[in-house]
Length: 308
Image (tube, rainbow, N blue to C red; front, side, top):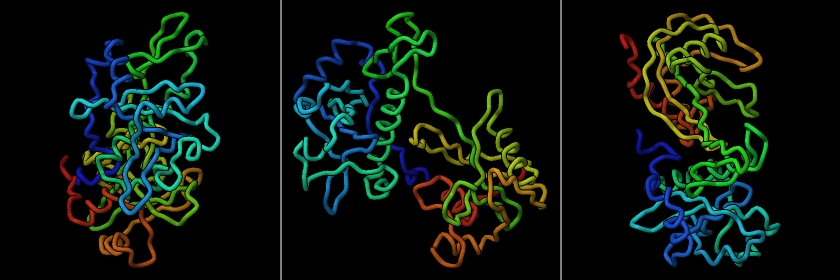
């Protein structure tokens, strides 16, 4: 299962030791072999054609972007440095970079399933990091400008010297199981009639298990017992970590929190098997989302959470 989770499995070594050396970073920026992934309004550049893959450029691309962007080091692969670079200052980026017919900037959610799985991890890393840098140009301590450090691994305040590091927001997401049934909800903010696993941000001072029990109780009124971690997924919109769990349902009655959900109900295993295969009238998340894999784990009999 874990090999099929989108936005994971990037082949890049993040070069944690090397990126501390400013001279090494400068050398990689000048190296002819280094590769740069352009992003425009957080959309990665993707090759056009039957085979979709990320479109990497050489350092000469940076000459076309004014003001010159600050490349962010993603890591290395086979000794080659890979950077992400923001080209959002270009009003017509494909034309300005001379890429007509060869590549296009695409929404990562829309194109992810067409990309090689390992490249989705690299693209997720690039998108999350760039989004964080855009939002943290000023110090949260004193309000003065910050500047990238260690190839963009963090930022430092130009005035008070405070260091700022990228954040990842943990989200507990769970398929609640009771015998041959699974509890799913229909989120209030989804425009389509889709049922999915129940999810919520983990709050300070809370364990994963406690967050699952709280979120399920708050949204549906169902009591949860054992919680079993199954799989996680980085979610780069802008930067969350989906912590996928299977949870033991102890009660059945549902009381929906209408601010969070439009509806919630128990689904039989056979009904969800049909939904995963595109049959029947129930819609569940596509394979892009970790909720899909939690539902599939239940359908395929991996839902034993009792006694955990």
